[in-house]
Length: 392
Image (tube, rainbow, N blue to C red):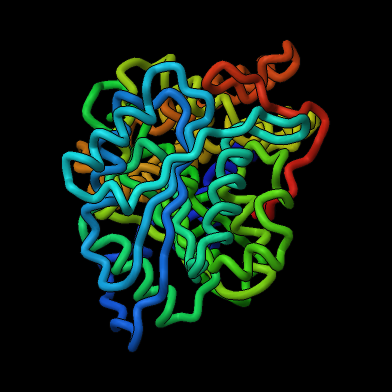
């Protein structure tokens, strides 16, 4: 009786996820699904790129920004956050090779003050510099140093923002997905993110759900300033979703998948991806042991129970477990197609879910041991402090 009840609960969890979360799994929110009209005039745009020890990718990312075919005034500010590998020199050489050194400004980042995460402090300095330009930009493109952009990306971002009067347009950059570890875990990373923050609901002004993807965020500078600037989220580990929640208070936002922005950062091994996930997983749970325990129970019911009942259960329990397993397998297919992955990875989603559960536990252990949010030599998590982002 208990087994049948647990199996039925797992099945109805997947019925809800498939039909009650805005049909997130269809992955319909894409920047190539429509063509926004060009604005009558193209506003001034400034890209702000925080960078710390990014010499291996910065030439390609900065080069892709400097090669934009944007019809209006567009320039790039790189904030070198105490790099030790010559990041600034590589970026400068890339601009020189393209003959556009005048469009690139490189700032040497100031020392990190207490109460800030490193990336947000670097972004804040770049934004302040942009605001002080003779013609301040109307839009800021906040983008990571390991993101490559197609030549039309900024033009398309601005056209979408202007057409919808959006305060934020964010793209989930296509992540590197070539190694076995990446093929196992990366499509699921985006799938789980979309499940937690359904893009359709993020894009619905009537919905309280808000999020953004930190690799590509086009924001209206004056709206951001009116909300307190980057300083308003200076302690956030999950800074992109926190920024999305902050800006959605002032107007509509848009988040979608894209082929126009791609991550240059490979993750060769499973531990590398695990560290990427564990940096922020416990922060997502507001550093709460109770939420951690609830999440572990939920992950077991959602991902582990269905195959267990399908393979070893009897009667109702077996059929309910099989039904849940089929639903999760089918719901994963659109994201697998987007990442050109084998459909068979859908059958393996329970195992993938188990790995993500382990990464979440590791995230909590890292925080408890004082290494939470560790990135580029900094442990940044603020144990016991809730992130000011919008929960789903």
